[in-house]
Image (cartoon, rainbow, N blue to C red; front, side):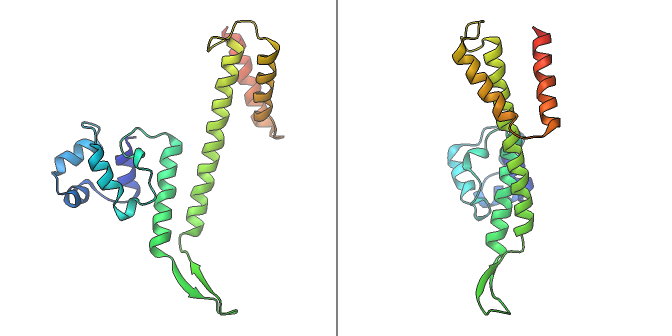
Length: 182
């Protein structure tokens, strides 16, 4: 999904509101949202300075987002809500002031999802590296020398460090499918 489209949907802001705040036509914003026009850097700068988007990486507005990037936008939304809605209260028992964040649990749940996605992304990256080593991609020779073999084993070990039999089984199936395809 195009970044600005996901960001606006997540923050519950529509294109008309953006157009009004930037003093531009609704059609221009609609074209950005639908990928018909690129967002000029000057406009990305302006949009990224909207109070709501304080925690959003400005580079995300104009690109196609990965699952991880989409989740980062959701976390940024909860960061914004937390900053906006948190209030200082006094502990009734100890009389000590603290910040009460009504969005803390929701934010923590979204961060957990983000962390899971990051782990999966890293595993996919490691598998691709292992596949490159196995098949001699990236200018490796077809014969795996001892250095490459050790690197491959190290990368596979990173994936298999847990005792999760399902993950190990999936890895085994994946490696078997790679060898059957060649």
